[in-house]
Length: 335
Image (cartoon, rainbow, N blue to C red; front, side, top):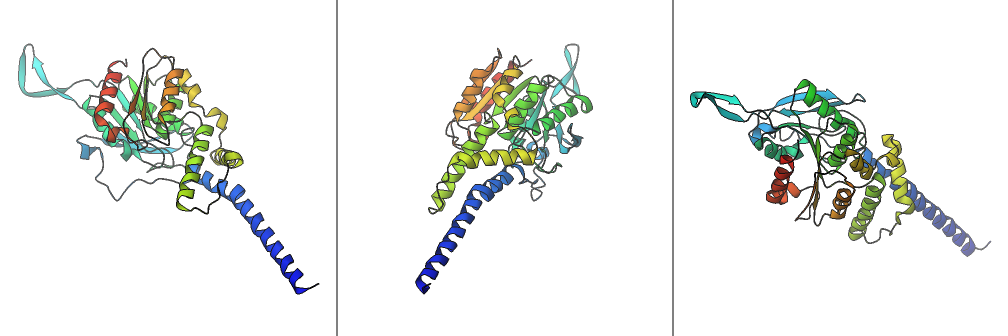
């Protein structure tokens, strides 16, 4: 055999091995890495900013700790309403005497993916100004709470349910109980409300339709982002890679993706009120999602608002005036 034939044979073997390795990476390792980002990448409480507590926002609070139904230790803050009014004796006000006006209800604040309870402090300050008790907490594998895996809302529904139980039993909080969630927190809130009749209403900000849908949509965004920065990255198709990400994520988090359906959850929540919130140019959770869920909701009290802006989950910070007006109107109709 001539030297040239040997070289070509070696080159073919090398090329074959490289191609095989690339196939294994892009259709095996790459989906697994994406699934790890979905289920295994924790967000820790920002201890470098220890002063960022409800006290910084003018609210009294107490540290709380409770467990989810499946035994995960969750940590958070309870913020009593604490609205003061002058005490009166007959028609005459008693000088220097004050008592507390009853809370208008209780709001459980549910943060987003890779965030912590700190994300919800501005919303909690607003809810407090309206006269509501508040409970902020870290979901499993986020912040100071326990747990080793996240599921983008499926198992987190048990955390939201536990927060409701903590507020009503240990803190003796008042009804109505409203779950106010952003993104993953909104998904958990809708799933929890579908199962727990003690939830009286939900504010769902920038959530998704189904687990399969959100993974496939975000897969497209990830590929677009990578190729925008690294032109040489191949335009990998959604099938079968996104389906692998779904399967790996569900395996890591131990749930059936077909059971993670917010369209079904919304139908089960009725007739309890729901406010759906979206940001007009949010590419991660476009407004059509909130509009679809709104159309499926059979509750006699339901609202939807599409806020100006671009940033996912930042509607409250970027368009506070219309957001606060929508929440105030919605809460006035919740009994």
